[in-house]
Image 1 (cartoon, helix red, strand yellow):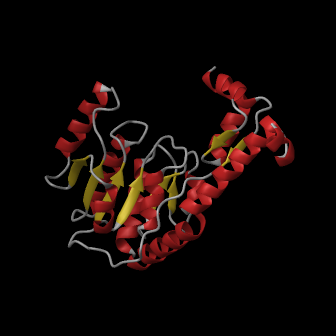
Image 2 (spheres, one colour):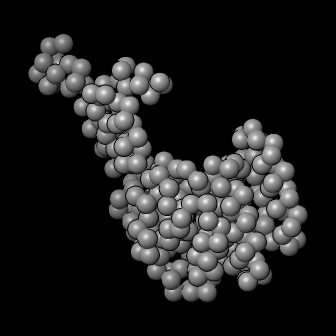
Image 3 (cartoon, helix red, strand yellow):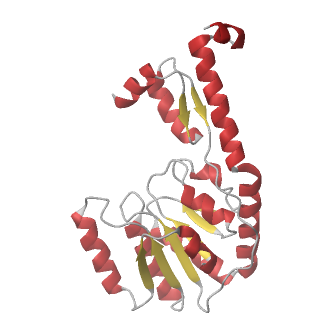
Length: 246
């Protein structure tokens, strides 16, 4: 109902991914839908601030949609085989309004080895990305997540669930690793693969950074939004000569 009302009032609808665009078109009627994918700021290529332990990070609010429980389950599976690995979660708590999840997270953390997983709460992602060796996105649903793009821009190899617009961000095996949703074992296997293969980490991370710098720039996003505004103006007022008269 809300999407149909928005489409009826709008001259154009903007989606951040083709996956979102397909959903919008089912409610848009005759209102055009255009895809303008998110961009991220340019990140200068720099050496990573490595730690002694192989460290895997994620950036997401604590919620079932973002797969916090899946991230912790995958962490436990990895630690059973690679016990020196460390995991860090950056993201706001207390937004999900799901008291059951709080209990689930606390239970999972109690069952993990001490100091193996650190929940860092809300803080700038850019402060943490240079310290990590790999990035995980365990979400059950996504549109076109900025966290994945930011990790790619920093040259991190990314393991991500193939949901929503994520497959439009990552070319599996080329610029990251895609895994099925709701499958902590698949996440763990991919993380172990990265843990054991420094060459793969380097290749995926370098390709990811190059892809973001060429395809997911803020300038490209701005150009797409400019085109969407022109489409809206043309639908409302007609081509430029008529628009000036109006």
